[in-house]
Image 1 (cartoon, rainbow, N blue to C red):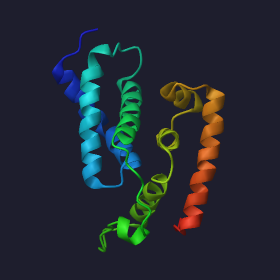
Image 2 (cartoon, rainbow, N blue to C red):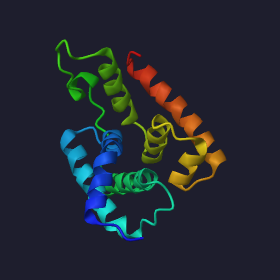
Image 3 (cartoon, helix red, strand yellow):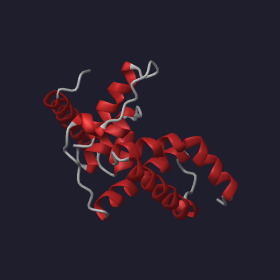
Image 4 (cartoon, helix red, strand yellow):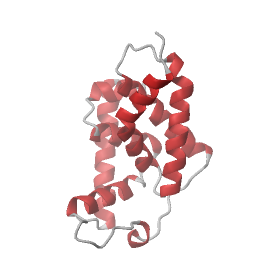
Length: 167
């Protein structure tokens, strides 16, 4: 199957939300998120000729984006900064700032304390992926995906509780 640059750019534009979500899951600093975004797009472009079209583009994109984020995270040996929540989240104090945005910021902060695989599990779960789809994206069995996801949700719940994030 032959794909053009225009088709690739169209698909990236239609699915860029996936990349943004992955970058927020793996990096808490905006500059690091931008670097990771670029790295993911570059890896997608490099891998694009191997995309056979046997799955949806977005499914293939999930897998490449998550693998790239994990490698990027390991390669740069980034560590989670465990300083105060108030120092890490810059939420504008305006009437436009909603409760939902604050809760989302707390969730992303809590997710920063998870390991790379746990972040991928939570990301795919939040994307409403089934256990089967999660397993396929991560290259594990469906049962393993279910068990790991349940353990990760419990761990995330504990992190939220321990840090006093309000939900």
